[in-house]
Amino acid sequence: MADDLNGNATPVGSSSEGRGGMTVEQCEKMIQKSFRTPTVKFLMEHLEKSGCSIGSKFIKAVDCDKRISGGYVRGEGVVVCSNHLQIQDEVNQVVIHELIHAYDDCRAENLDWTNCAHHACSEIRAGHLSGDCHYKRELLRGHMKLRGHEQDCVRRRVMQSVTANPYCSEAAAKDAMEAVWDVCYNDTKPFDRAP
Image (cartoon, rainbow, N blue to C red; front, side):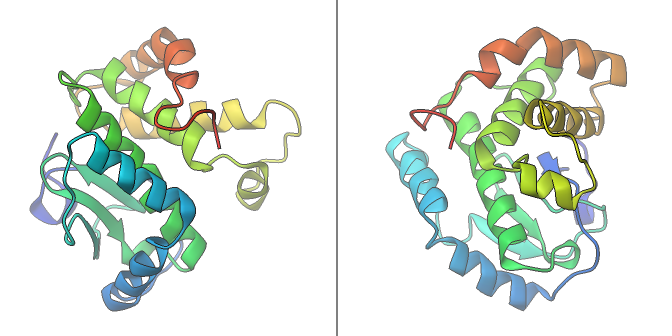
C-alpha cells in the first residue's frame, strides 16, 4: 500500500464513483443506517465469526482527496468518502464492497495487497458479491449492455482498482485478473451464492 488518502495508506479495493458529496456528519449517520441492512449485518456477523473483531470505529466517514468512494485499509478498517457520495444507497454499496475486502483479508492468512493476483481476486469477489454491477446501477452509469453486463462491469471495475495499486501495471493487472477470474468469481463465501 502507498500513502495517499489524506496521508494514510491508500485503501485497497477502493471504489471510484462520486459526483459531489455530503458532510462527514451526514455520512456517519448513513453509515449507521447501513448497519441495519441485511447484507451489512450478515457480513459483519461473518467477520466476527471468522475471528476478526470490528469495533465501533471500524467503518468511518472521511473527506477524501482522491476521487474514490471508499476503501479498506488493513489494520485500520473501512473508510467511506463522504465528499464523493450523495445518497444512502451509495453509502450502503461502499460499506458492503469494503466489508467483502475486510472479510477476504480476515480469512486469508497470506493475503498480500501488493500482489496483483491477490488484489484482483478480492476485487472480483467484491464486485460480484456486493451488487456494484447490478444492471440498474450499470444503466445509471451509462452502460447499456443487456447481456453479459455484470461480468463486463466487474472486469472494468477490477481493472480500475488494481491499476491504481502502485505495485500493478495495467498489463500486470489484466494478467492477474484473467489468471484468477474463474476461481475468484465462483468463490461466494461467506454467502451460499452470489446475492
